[in-house]
Image (cartoon, rainbow, N blue to C red; front, side):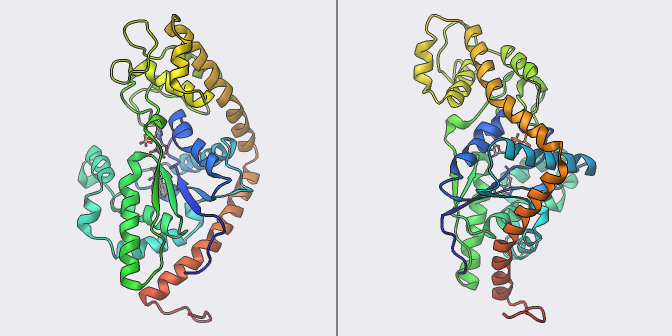
Length: 342
Ligand code: ATP
Ligand code: LTN
């Protein structure tokens, strides 16, 4: 295997599928990526090719992709420490995906639960072949860079498992090529729930906007949504996911933002009302998100600079990806193009 990184490598990405990232994406994913920046060699990318597995308006997609990149940076991804790039800027992703498609079983791909869920929504006939091979492209995203770990939410565990299986299968058939990556799954506390429906996870595709906190919302909208969050019957502030999901969600948000154990927060709220908790959560969320929003808008004001940063990231990513792809092409038996050495 060529080209060993000095620090262990991790890689992750979030689709540019919404108007803005939300608090769940931020606390469940981005914050953890930011934390790993000093311990690992990091690659963070925007899977825009995955986004078109379902229909996208081209103008919207361009806007969302830039907005997502700006939010990664404003949220703490330091382009001096991490490689930040767009998937579509690195053609090796699609090239490796083709090779991996050819060692993936049809039945194996059919068992992916995300495909089953997403295709069930519009009916199997409407689902694209791209949606079907989505996990194989994701395996290519990962394996190209030979990371040791992939920090993702629990919902992505099955996809990382497929990447592991394909890495092992390829290595077995063609000789040692890929690192078998570990899923780095965040613990349960990192899950943020919908403010209006606190038993469902906060999600871009939630039924209504009021349960969602977007990074790019105006601070007063954010504060209002938190103050109107559904709480539970009774008046006692307690951490009880079963019986008090609304209050529990607010406590967990506050605990994550203030780095205070939930138990200590609960003690501090003895004898106080839900309204006090909501006001504190609103203050903490606004205080954290406001600078991120401001920085995002600033970055979006200069799209040329943002595009330059992304081009720089893509060039660095390609340095790694091209080495892996050449190795793979050689191992499967493709003749090298004229003028190159095998
Ligand atoms: P969709 O609504 O399309 O399912 P989403 O809002 O759930 O999207 P994804 O793009 O699927 O977000 O996820 C991006 C990352 O954010 C993943 O690592 C995922 O685990 C994390 N994430 C998403 N929602 C939450 C949440 N409510 N709490 C914690 N982490 C979350
Ligand atoms: N499917 C992931 C996004 C994604 C990804 C990846 C994450 C695409 N390729 C490679 C980690 C590694 C999602 O929906 N969050």
